[in-house]
Image (cartoon, rainbow, N blue to C red; front, top):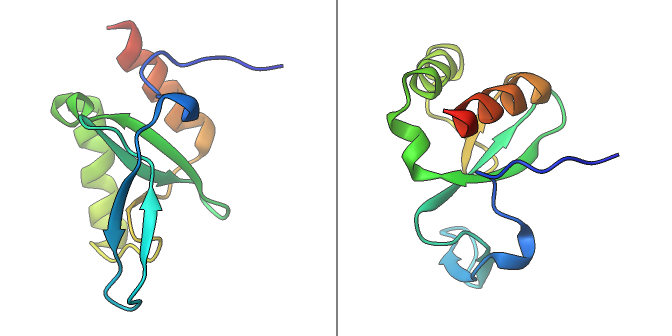
Length: 100
């Protein structure tokens, strides 16, 4: 069983961009199209989501970011923004943002 969230970009439609890692001389490939950003979501196991930058101005998404900052600060070991909430709760938030 699967479902599709319109605001989340399918992997096939992503562009490739390379970023250099300060610890490694080699660059890694990160698939994030212009106008989107990647977040890692989950409490124990992290799942990567690529979402529109426009979500950053949504009050409900801002509340989630503030809560994450208060609980965990700005240390993100995955290299990207890490949100430690239940994956189901994050998907529900994305669904509500997509419908508005």
